[in-house]
Image (cartoon, rainbow, N blue to C red; front, top):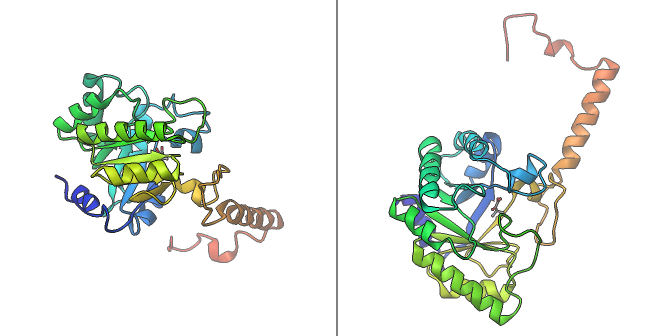
Length: 263
Ligand code: KIV
């Protein structure tokens, strides 16, 4: 087993697992110094491409962004989201997951559970492709946002799903938008790490979409803490640049290329 994955597994019940998303090199390089896991999420469909959902994102786009992210990653475990429609049968899943792994040299793929695709996970794991599962609110399969696991019946159904994903061989599972009770129930009753998003602190680790936590995306549900307000910072810089250009203050002599020095 990949040493990075082994290290993630060892953290269960010991220390929290830190994860964020990245879609390009410069951000990945910053995350790599701090995160255990960097995910090239299909959330790029909404965040980068302004699409309404993740359904039309294609494999080529995800692979291209991963190639960029990979250039910034040295230490973190790099996981790639398989886009909707790229893993709906065993043969297709295997072909596409192998392609992702071969072209990007990532460490693992993530796929969303539709409560039936446990055999797909099993097939990928059998082919030595490490898989991260994803349950609860799964944007590829659900149209409407909903908090999952509200009744004890629903929480137990989610636990059953998580156990089947674990049995299929996944090395960890994302829990998206689960109640604290259902997150705790799952985290306590499976042996692989749970990574929460909008699922309270009752998980082995946490993930957020980086653009959300940096205050860049405009998407700020209750579970997102804004650690920066980059939209404001960028706007300030752009305003200053606009003013300088209009006033002829930029570029200054020090910015001219009239010697031999480029830098
Ligand atoms: O696509 C994504 O960014 C994700 C995370 C939110 C877990 O799946």
